[in-house]
Each structure stands twice: as structure tokens, then as C-alpha cells.
Length: 72
Image (cartoon, rainbow, N blue to C red):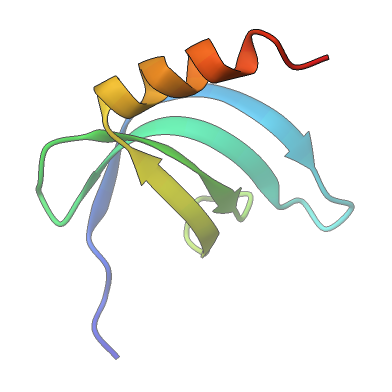
């Protein structure tokens, strides 16, 4: 299996953590040496294992912020 190359450029924050240490985090991540994107996904404690997630451009994260302002 091919290794996924990534670099966490900036750690923004943790949304939640499981009893096993996996955390849902928002980070700025460069995948495959591409331009960094805002990335929301599950990570193991040491960031060596990666769960499912979503990567968003700056424009998309701004739009998401706008959409969430009315959520109660």
C-alpha cells in the first residue's frame, strides 16, 4: 500500500477526543506536497494514523463559517 504524504502546516484546534485517544481536529494540511487546505478529520494521538475527513479550501471554510453562524 502506498504511503500517504502529508504535512500538518498549522494545528488549529481539537473538536473532540475518544477514550482511545483519537481526536477530531481542524488543521491546515498539505497533502501530497500540494497547497495546504483546511482539514477536518480524525487523527490518532501521534498523528501517524488517519481517519476519514474532509479538506476545504480557504473560500470553502469561509463559506462554511457563514453558513454555521445561524446554527443554534
